[in-house]
Length: 272
Image (cartoon, rainbow, N blue to C red):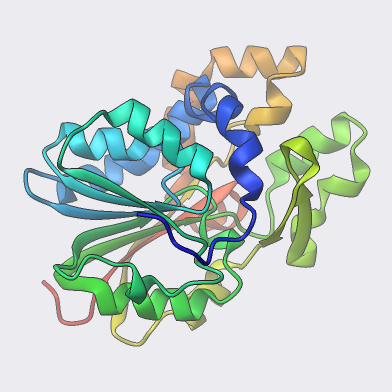
């Protein structure tokens, strides 16, 4: 399905290298595994999953392997091409090209609704009106649905240290400003916002309650910067151990607020 309201997709130029830079890199796998560990009990045969900002389909492939039905949405046609290549012709997956800054989720959602809604690894950071999107998520969710929102916060010491060590002083504290304009492959730009956990909580519809929150990437070095330095390569080889430490730290209040990403697990008020 293609939406007529899609603006030029900034992430088209990132699609070719995205898996190499993030998804299949050891640190990227470790951070994704942290999220999957929390989600896996909510995914089984027949689960209807909405994958907002599905990227190249790494999460979708994981959901499908567990018998779920997946609706992936992304603003990049190139990312969706990778999704189709990765998942093949399974009837349990379908994809929608849409920029959710320009089109309402309620207008493109499946009428049958969803049991699980996931916005993984910074998708919400690219959304101007997060409150409206979350309200739409509530509208398209089934009774008993679970939501997982993985968001880049405004403070990430491990990233700042890495950038300072490389002399990238202008970028080291860009998150603290709350908003930045990122330049992607091919010279395209995109607005990025960095809401705190507290801010995102205030934007949540009243029908949602927080089940859990945790940090992802407290001590795991930033993917793109770590791969370019000798110290970073050493740390990447140690990711299995660092990942375990990271998961433990991510459960603390400090870890949640200082991680590369934080995750909010939400459900509807009154659910058991």
